[in-house]
Each structure stands twice: as structure tokens, then as C-alpha cells.
Image (cartoon, rainbow, N blue to C red; front, top):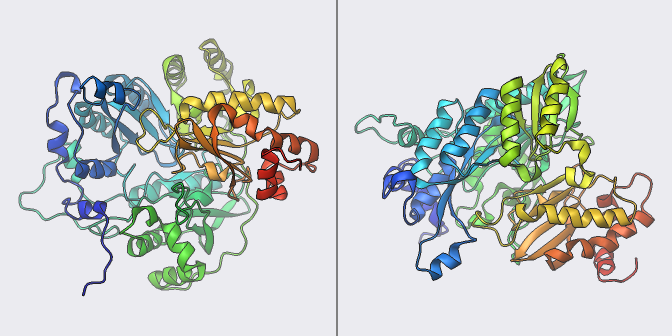
Length: 566
């Protein structure tokens, strides 16, 4: 009797897809009307396969119910995500993306927490020309989503030194080397001809059904953990000696996603697995991808991430398997060094005589006047943009003589600069959530401003207005804005209701824990006020809010939030 587990539906779709082709081309073209509109949604098969090509079909959830009541179909559209290794773009590439936002999207761009760029509101008939135009500008959407290695992120600061150069080079090399080998993307979206009668391409790394789930890689150095390295499936922390990268600490098994009321799912930080040489990044990355490929759960997608393999098999088993794969024993990593998250906004010297200006972009959304003034600034000053894991934008390669003119242009255009924000607003992340994300249970991006303003008033009442805090807001527990890795996590539970998490640290080395459930949006700040007030009264010298919450403990914090004095 065959005792092998039943595969998930996605595994069957991938297996029969002819290496990610399926019927994508036919379905995108079917029913396309002038202007790119098309009735109805795509099939489940095409929806699943489109992710590998960098796009999700979505619909406007604000209008779905009234349209249904009126006998109308949903307002369908697509999110298209650009893969930007290390967040690096040229000025010319940014201007192409900006123009495409009007031609094929909803007139906005969005910076992601993984240093990518997203288009929203793309009509079905516009998906192919948009992806083709992105490719012609020497960018790609391939593998920006799907069960493969996604956009590779790293510390974004464009400092001209040996450490940053090595981080960027490795991120870009990994991004290219770990792409799928299938030519499906080029044939569907770029009209590349296929050889008649040719067999599907081999996928020597991924195999015929790719990975069990998405796979995220980050690189960082101890002085800049902006990428939240330990939240990744695979991380490479630079070992820096004498201003050079001499090796790497490999971390495996991080991931933010979970499901409410399912304790078998949980967020997890990666474990240090090994210390490797400076030139071994790619071969070790491939070995870890193979580990995920061969041992990840292909029956239950909620249990398919590599973090569950590490949690259940253990660090020693993982190191042994990787050592066997590589044909040599891996050195134990030793303890992680202290990590820091520096301020990258405002003006900073690059080290080559030029400057970068870090601009805060609330929730990463670039629209309206902000988009217009950024376009003018990038065009006029030739600034090369860098997207950060904090959803912000660094304008780089600014000449000293242009600093005053650039800042004047931004201020005249109404752009809010870093010095105009409170630390709380500066360090607040939010996912897209409603109205487009199909996973959202509550609001994210659209309530970021309200949550920040409410908490700012509480902080001001207790003399804490100048304190640095990391706040992360998501519309569901999948964790796209890394809510469990910050000091305050606000996680969507149901429409208008949230779970509150406390106790993580600003540096990204500790998870938070839940302290209140089903909190109404308008009561988030009020619910947290007793903890913030206690921090103001009782904290030790230099003690951050997350550290104070950890010291107090989960149960005492929960009692405090219910009105029991600490």
C-alpha cells in the first residue's frame, strides 16, 4: 500500500504545468476588451502559476458586495511585483516604472518590505505588456512570487566600502543564479519562440515541482540589520574583520507566517547553522534550497516552510544534512554578534564624495504629488533609487552642489522629510491589506496613519515622544510587515479587530508575544497605554520598550493591560 502523503492541490498544478506554462497565455488573452478589461477571474491553475511570473490576481474587496448585490462581477485586477535584487534601481529604470504606473496600473507605485516595487490595479489585458516593458528596462518580475527563491534583500545603505560592495554583489549573484531555468516566462510574456517538439526544460536546482513554498534569502552585516535577517528562510551575516568580509554566519529557518487558532503554525527566527568562507555563499545557498525542496511538507502548505523542518529536525540534523550535501563538514557558527539597525533616512555621505538622501515613504505607497516630485527629482538630479526593507526610498549619488536644490524641490512639493516625523512614525511598517489583498482579515496600510497618530498622543502624554519604537501593522497573520519581529505588532484578526504583540526588540533578534486579542482599531493605543506608561515610570537606563516588556513578562503585561497595576 502506498503510504506517501496526499499532495496539496498546488503540487498537482505545478507538476502538470509544463514548467510553469499551463494555460496562462490563453487565459490572459481570453475576453480582453479595449482598455484591457476582461470579465471574470482566471482559473485556480493559472492563479497559482502566475505567482511564479510575479503577479497575483486580485479584486477590489470594497466594491465586491455591492457589485454582487447589483448582479455585477467583481472588479478584477492584478498586482505585479518587480524583482529588485538588493533594492537597487537606476534613475532610468525608476522613470520607466513611474511611466508604466499610469499606462498600465492605478497610477501608484508601492515599495515592499523586501525591497521590491509593486503595481496595483493592473487590468488583465495589461499584464503582458506591463511585464514585457519591465523586462525591456532590464528588470524582471520572474520569481518575485511563487514557490521559489524570491527577491534577495540586503542592507540598503549605499556606502562605498568593501563590506557593502560584497553584500550587494552576493545579493545580485544569488538573485540571478537561483532563478528558475524554465523559458515559460520569456515565451508567455516576451513572445520568445519555443523549439517545436522540445521537452520541458530541466530544473536542476528546483526539480519538476519547484519548492514546497516560498523561500526568502537575506544578507546583512552586524552594523545594519535593516533586512531583519533572522526572519528569512536563509540568511548570511557577514563576518567583518579589518573592514573586509572574511566569512559568513549562515542562519536557517526563519519565517513570519502563521494562522490564527492553529498552534501548529507559528512565526520563527532562524538559527545560526554554520560559519563558512567568504566565497562559499552560492554553493551553500543551493544546498539549503535543496534541503527545503527535499524535506519541506508538500501535503500541507501551511506547514511547508523550511522553518518547520528546522524546528522539528533540529540544528544538528540540518548541519549534518548540509554537510553531506556539500561533501565537507560545516564549521559550527559560534554566537551571533550584536546586531544594530541604523538610521538611513536624511543626508548621509556615501564615501565617494557624493551623498544619499533617505526619504520616508509611509507604507511604501508612492502616489499623487509625492510620485510627481520624486519623478522630477530623479530626472533632474540623476539620483539612483534604492528601496529599503523599511519601505523607504534612498536617493543616491547626489553631488554636494545639488543637495540644497534637491531638498528645496522636495519641500516645495510637500514631501515630508525624516526630521519632520516622530521616531514612531519613522519606524512604522504596514502591509497592503484591504482592499486588494485576498488574505487580509482587517485593514493595514489604510489605518497606519490612525494607529501612529493615536500612539503618538499616548507617548506624548507620558514624556515618550522622542523614543524610538518599531511598530508593525498587518491585516492578517501571514506577517508581510514582520509584525512578530518588532517591539509592537498589530495583527489583523477580523474586520476592525486586531491581536497585539509586545516584547520583540528593535534590532530584530527576538520575537514578540501576544498580549491582547480582538482589540478594536480605535482602542489599540488605549489598550497599550498602561504598558507604555509603566515603561516611562519603571524602565532602566537605556532600556527599550521591547526589552522592558520582556523583563516584565507576558502574564504580568496582560494583567497590566486589563487594569491590574504592575
